[in-house]
Amino acid sequence: MCQSTFLFRQIKKAELSFYLMKLATSNYALSMILTRRAVLSMMPQYYLWEIKKKLKICSYSEENME
Image (spheres, rainbow, N blue to C red):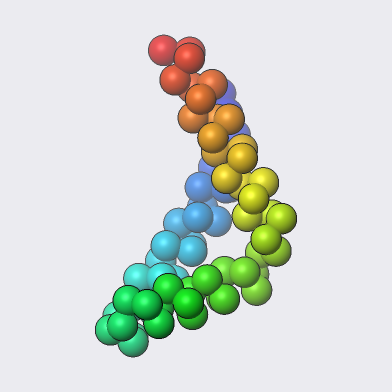
């Protein structure tokens, strides 16, 4: 089993912050920019890259197990 719970939570936090930002600004493009900045300030770009890589590996390995 792949341990992606922590990574999943981090991504959910980013999605939630985007949703809240979108409600606050009611402007999709602006909320995208603000959320991206907020997320990048929390997590460096390298860390985000690693998360994406691990999630791809996890989903790929779980599909092959079935």
